[in-house]
Image (cartoon, rainbow over all chains, first blue to last red):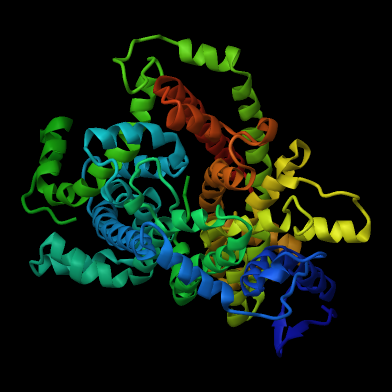
Length: 291
Length: 311
């Protein structure tokens, strides 16, 4: 073995050629630019004064950054027919109630499926796992029929209740509990006379904090990004995302306000992700499917 | 599992044993009940109901009549737009699914050896477009049909084109552009799952591999890395395929509905057209059933392929 070993920061690295490192960095830069530049353009647009937005030839970067678009957005919000605060309330309310309901129901079910052996448990989990394979659009029309039978159309519940039982939520939670909650600890709690519910709440739940943070984020993103829905007709119940879309319909003069609103819409999920990134990655560690 | 009473299983029939187990674990049923009831109502029942309604001419107003396979016959023999939609959906899924899957895997692998702080930032750059709601509308601004659109502006300025190209209104450009945008927003759950899978691989495996004659990073990837993250590869595939079939919203937002000459019309749009706008629920249910079958079929197929990786 006369081959010279490569090192990175004084640590030996195996099987890494300098050429490969360079190639990978190059590829990553190109892909990164493809992903990042449009996002940067969103921010640039929101800072451009109106004459720069409608300038030929268009420029990528802003020359005289201004916050006017954001101020315009707030003025627009105050003059709309349904007060903008109502749209914001709608989105925040459905996001929060939907997310916490989902967290509670999914983890309760996931605990039972992961840690109690009962007839039918495996079958139920398999059904949920299979449902990961199809997009919810296929059930849209028939869900409408069911919701009208339950008198849920045109209420907050049409958005909230289906969000309480998402397949991805249960799937991630169950996988994480399976690998991260030891049976021995649960068993000793049961022997001490703790009820199953108590064991779930005081022992299992604190152990799966990363998973419930992940579930909160997924559920929140999903609800936050909900646009117009076939289940909601009343203007007063529509979402923030829908209202933002309406600003754009206002034409050239509104272009600046729309750019500003897009930035606000995207910042919230991104901030939430930044705060919880390490927890999400930890949860994803047990996301694997065996067959 | 501790058993309170010594019960000898061989004394009982299977049904008796199951009943006993069910009674012993009744708390488990209470725990799964709320979730399973809602899940059934909004996922299982809708799928089954679609199948039933697809054999009727239900339209929300009149009582449904049983029409056997009429809807399916009309769909495949009499509806040219549906066939266009099928073609577009398959093109979409066949390009977006694998490309987004490979890109997620490659990027996750590229950034795996970066220092944690930098890795977190790069992860955010790649993941952000998929979680930021309608931020993909920026592609509509970049490729806007007037000379203020960035791409048109640059091309006009360079003299490549002499008049503005109506990017999202031109049947030649609509599909490729929508595919690019769909890929841009597609580094989602599977990407995070791959990052976690790569982080979870035991470092000593690589050292052992080097001793056993693995000579470069590509061999390491194929012989050690991929086989040890099989479950993540499987989960990622399911998530990628499912979302590759769900990009109708992006198309509608960028090209309007219906898209020019139905150039980017997918099965999802067709479903929405008949179900959400014309209220031909029977017919749209048949569309939903076909779409459902395609999604499940694609997943089954891909899972077979993935299970062969590294073996």
